[in-house]
Amino acid sequence: MDLKQLRDGIDNVDSEILSLFMKRMELCRGVADYKKEHNMPVFQGGREQQIIDRIVELTNDKNLEKGTSALFTTIMDISKILQNRTILAENRNYKYTAPDFAGAKKIGCQGTSGANSEAAAKKVFGDREFTFYPSFEEVFKAVQSGEADYGVLPVQNSTAGSVDSTYDLMANYPFYIVKMVTLEINHCLAAKKGTKLEDITCVYSHRQALSQCEVFLSKTGLKKHEYSNTATAAEKVLNSSEPIAAICSVDCAEKLGLEIIEKNIADCTINRTQFIVIAKDMQVAEDSDAVSVMLTIPHKEGSLYRLLTKFYVNNMNLLRIESRPIRDGSFNVMFFLDFSGKMTDPNVEAVLRDLEENLDFFRCIGTFKNETFS
Image (cartoon, rainbow, N blue to C red; front, side, top):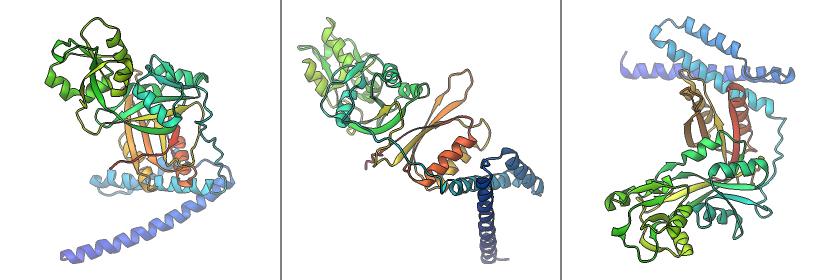
């Protein structure tokens, strides 16, 4: 056969495969109706493994066994999502509390007045008094205990990447993301009045800020020292008798009366940080179009592939995927995923249910309006 004949043959086989796939999905709908009527779970691990074992046994080419296993595993994953959609079709409950930012009595931020977290909080809550805590963990604790209605925390910077300490704490505290806000960051080098650049012995700032200004610091040869927050670093400079400096915002430097030695010192001209607003309970704003989850997957081949397939099949764009070590002595990780979708979308509900049924650990940690930038 020539190449055209071979390709025509493949097209014919593909049509047969599609026809059989559609027939299989129709049978799956019947299975879903039966499970719904008899209150049975969609996921039945024993049945799934039986199918895979049988398919592998029927594969008469050793080189194709993994391929057929992957093919039928994907088909079954699609089937489970379809069954969840069917089962949930007449049993939807979208009663969520809307965020009440205007009525919030106490909002927690890390650091002190002048911190970027305060500027981010102002974008959500307006010009009001905020409660400042010494660490990110104290903000989580305040929200968890009900001491604070909302907390504002950085999660990602466009230059330096994820704020690891926030992600580590997200795995340890119950909370929900109710909003995402993006802040333009304008770092400057600030010191006490009269201090010259050549006299500065050390620069203090948060690890992220230092990382975002790496080129400037390398060029000037200034010694770096990590500090809890850009604003508290600026306060340290103000109260020190040593010729030290801080990397902080222009607003913070001006508020404290520090001299701005150099402006716009970040490595990238456009430097943005995303902050999450967290609450103790699930709250869904009307314009929310992204969902955030945390989960673990089995430590075996194909697990990540199967996870990503679920979002692709449902036409859900993955906006972010992070992984952090669980810190239990193993090398297992916790995954944090943000994906496009509304909580009122039955496809989203089907995916969330599928993840909850099939993973050892899964938790939906909120929903928010996704901000996109060109």
